[in-house]
Image (cartoon, rainbow, N blue to C red):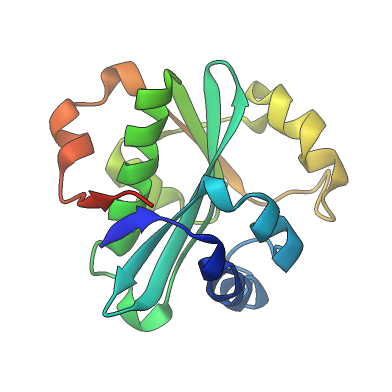
Length: 166
């Protein structure tokens, strides 16, 4: 089940994100950062266990970022990541945001959902807010992808997304 994260989920989100970060699949996050941004997070919970997470961070009036997408290794390929991303896209649309991007190593995953690849230079809000403080700047090896929500089918946003509020 996909649901908004609760404060009590922060330690489990922290472990999940940083397990993936140690493998070089995403950037690490501190526990304090996760607590500070807990309202941005969605989790996929199965039998009381969090097996996936993602965050949607608003960057500008028309722009948000999908961050910290992590699915437990033994649960990959089940559609959990897709469900989490679709929950973020649905929330972004409800917030009135028209574009959602991600910096990712999982380019093909995002392209299958409908994102397209762009140059990072097309995201100055991200570069001058976060990237300049990253240890990988200016030699970032992540790929930038973006989706315009006006082109996303409402059926896609409802696809296998069973969302439960806090």
